[in-house]
Image (cartoon, rainbow over all chains, first blue to last red; front, top):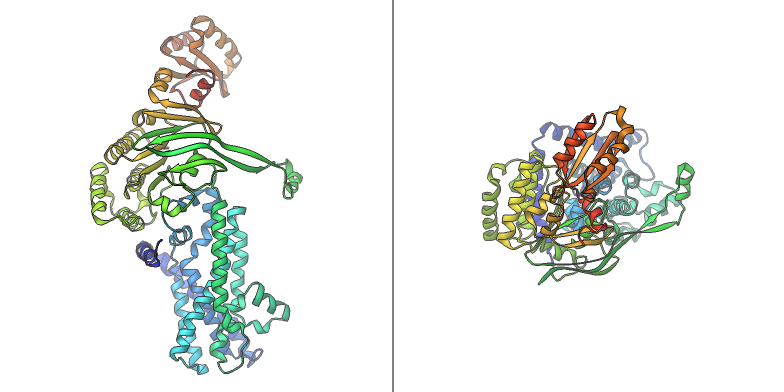
Length: 266
Length: 340
């Protein structure tokens, strides 16, 4: 049995080398980082415009919206950083190069995902942390030790939700060969993660809570910090658990997929 | 001891019967009209430790499927399969620890990283201890002058250099069995012979069992004592390469092209060659496209030059080619009783 430490060591050596190699293309690095920063800032912009005209939306202030938005940026960062190779899986499946990932004494998903570390995602982490600090200062969120632990736990749980959904989308490729459209569709869900589920009608509220638990990525866990004294719905505490359960399911589907995928002819 | 054992191994695929045209494509969306394709059927094979076995067959013969089953990528439909005493698909990761695989044109090194970093990462993945790592790297260094390539990213290597690196890398963790799938494909003669040398030396030094697939019979002649020829998913010949070489080693294919004006003369040419050379069984003929005609000639009985001279004397030859006999031709000959 291989320990997490074994995988961590391998990951670190691959990623260090990968970063070294990537930094050789400096222009590419700077342009994509700047692009990423703009994308993330542009995401806040519509919210800012809305709040410029109205003081609150469904009982939420601009700073609360900012908090949720930045929480979602952080929760989506691990997907961006460590699982970006999901976007290339169609070409590996179609050309048959995917079978190379079966040929090492390692977990196939680990081996596959370890090949890409998306450097520009680090700017997303930076913006998320900066925005979260700003918003919580404005909102007087108390960062006690308990709250920090709670934040880390809920971020891990939340990040697993979108990771699992994307892995499920990618896994469809083992049967349908080209999962690009499914992946793009599921990727759209992340746009909804940054909005408070409470602004949707009951139908979408139900969907985004129980069917595709996008609300558990940022909105519900944020309530832990935004409304610590209120009676929150139970879902607020459950969202980290949902992430873990989803990941177990996604991993099982992926494993079933790699067993049924047979690669192309030669 | 049998390192690899296949007993009545089969792999069947379910394939949708496609209908024609757009309406057919729409119909196929809901069709349940499958047929079974037998990629491998009832294949039995035993390979001993330390052997190099050439595994050949025409395209679509089931070579890749068999290799994929032996490496644990594909699960057999039925039959027994053990490699190094294990069932490859069971506990895949553990199995991979003891085998090595090189797939022709697809590198398993890290594309963007310098060569030496790939070796260091492989060392971690396979948990190779420092002293065996150093020992192996020294052997590789002697064989392929690895140090000169250390700092070059894999993607800057030539195809031949990359192949050499891939092959030695597959020996790094001292596996018991190595599968080399088309290691010389697309390479020129000089690098091919280096690759053969490297494989031969490493096999002798480490007593690794090697399964080699190739389209190039000279690879097999240079490396293997034993050749397994498969076609349509099952063995058609399993035995010494010498027998195949002595049977077909003297065979050459002479390809002749006549100018378009002479296309009509093709049949006539065939009959006239047949009539001129009395040992008719030594020459087989086949017409190909664009006025090409292929003569497979057994030189033990008829000299190729005589045939060429005769044709050149009577017909306005446009172009010629001379080739060694291909695997496909050998398989065809075996069916016709060539090795019986």
